[in-house]
Amino acid sequence: MKKSGRKPHMVNSISELHRIFSLPKPEHPLISVIELEKTHSIASEISDSVVFNFYSVWLEKDVNTKLRYGQQYFDFEEGAMIFIAPGQVLSTYSHSHSPSGWGLVFHPDFIRHYPLTKTIKTFSYFSYAVNEGLHLSEKEESIIITLMKNILQEYQSVIDHFSQDLIVSQIETLLNYCNRFYHRQFLTRKNAGSHLLSQFETVLSARFENKNESGLITVQELAAALNVSPDYLSDMLQSQTGQNAQQHIHNKLIEKAKELISTTSLSVSEIAFQLGFEHPQSFHKLFKKKTKLSPLAFRQSFN
Image 1 (spheres, rainbow, N blue to C red):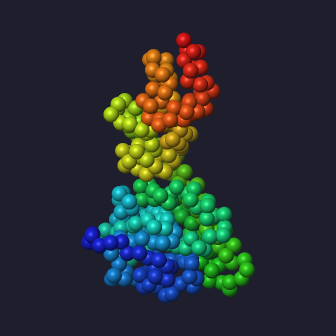
Image 2 (image 1 turned 45 degrees about the horizontal axis):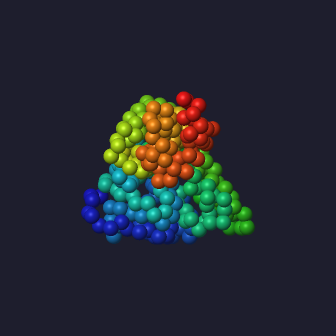
């Protein structure tokens, strides 16, 4: 597909997604496992961009597809997994006529009364899937496909009192495996992580030295400067250093505060404002939490 500038097409239901893929009506209105080999031509009214109002997990292989997710592009020529939460925009710029792989789609209502409703929001790969697609080993891919087939088999069977519990449990298992595989991927990509860490430290230091900037430094601000999402930045830093982006910001802030307290005659309030705090009490609380001393006690002990 070529970019047309049309508004994203809203896909509100699993049934509509099946129609778009020229598939038979789904056997369950709130969940479906899609074998991409069985999909056909895409409905003509679909624009370049689509918004799914349900969760979708895609494992695509040998697909000549280029996607845009947020401000990032991802090439699927090698195959990978992506994860899309309800309301997120996905744009396609070219696609294969014979895709292969699997898709799991489920409406938020399907998991509404289960702990997974909250747990799923902790899986940060739903917010940066295209920035760092999940590449699977053959063994990992086999696990994911087996779980998708189990879900397919369960909702195609006779529905009973236990069906939804079992399906939700298997969805959660699949997402937990993906979480494990993502962290494995972080650990095996140390060079990329080290490069991002170096860039992060440079941007963070520069931000503290820029006296024209006001307000507290945020993870969102730094992530934007590095062209990654806040969740991705925090996860990568966590895997490399054991601390997330916010902890790094606080550490740098306390380091700068110590410097100002020990080398200047500025009052604690003046230092707090210079560091971007709107209220000195907030600075006092953070400083004491991190150092076990109040700013004044630190100044006295230093002197």
